[in-house]
Image (cartoon, rainbow, N blue to C red; front, side, top):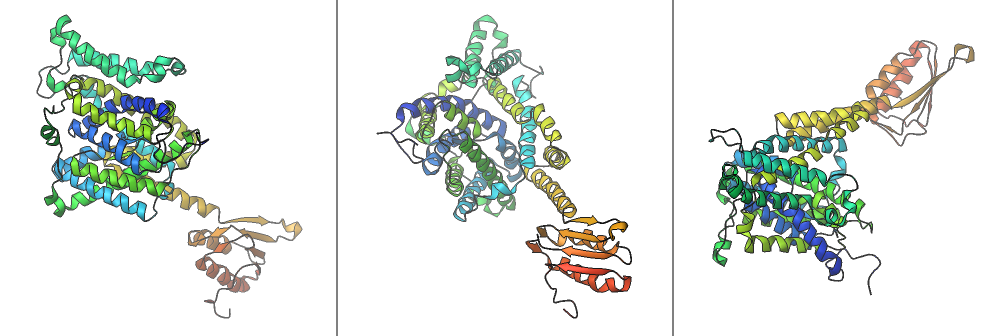
Length: 503
């Protein structure tokens, strides 16, 4: 007998729904795994590795029923710059192992709420900045640009990328998914199949357009079990003395954790059964996954909303669908490497161009602008700062701007004031806010100093749950100094300040 609400644990009860959903997610994930590895400047095989681990290992330990993990577009910039900063891909893998351990500890320390403390404007700015970087990095690949070539582009790559973009955009037409083919067959898969067929067709129709091997996916082909195992890369443990490895590890852990928590929150909202995923358990699962990925040569991973939404739309019910997709990725590199090596890089670049545009589409900028400067400035400053520095610096600069607006807002909302007309007695009533902190000290002191001689002032703290000791000192000092200005002061529910003489 089936349950009304599918379990969040591992279950074979819904294989009828989970198997086809896993197949759909596999078709979505395969080009993304390869494309993200390409954009990251890492071996293409590393993208498949992290897809397999994200699908099998992370899904097994995760408490989320529908979330799918794998290499994420949001980490491409970190990987690309990180490999350069630490000196080698093997040293980068050591940083990933350490990042995974940090994530595991964050989950163990119940830090799954950290995502709530980063302003959404900054997170959206980070994603928009990554979108811009993806577009800038993938555009040359889409046209087959190579520094060592006399021609600035390859016509075959241009044609394949252009048609692939058209295919992907057709899949984005509103309402197109109501047709069975468009619903069950991902646009990215169609674009990849077209690219392979087109390049093969060029061999007989227009040989000068045929793409050389350097413009195609290059995965090692294993002829035996030992060959397959030799494809994995081990981290360089001698790099543990390089401080840049630890800086990179912290960066990966923070960004990967944030993106995971945001994706998990989105997945729970999309879940038709409204199951809530335990965030601390998710960080532990991601930590285990990233540690293993680093140990065998994979990319960093997160929970990914693109694959997760594909899983939900395909009717996935439990985490078995994510595991099925991971097993299919494993099968593809074991048995289909020679087929995958026929895929033009221009196809993958087209997929990533669309992903990049979705992250940084014009509508996002207009939407953020309409929300006002308090949202738009942190957003746009994060976008610009990431372009000219790096991801972590850009995020912290955006957070700093957000904090400025919070302080500014609190500074303005520390009290309300009502002043009667002189004909009504000219009394002044100040009602303090619920939280009055040291941030409000300056504005309150200035307002009290501006009251004219002979005023009758009532300061009411009835609504205040907290009044900072610095503010109490100012209020009680004002009450004593008011005698010199013939100001009559009444304090209502204002705690005593023992630091003032005579109190």
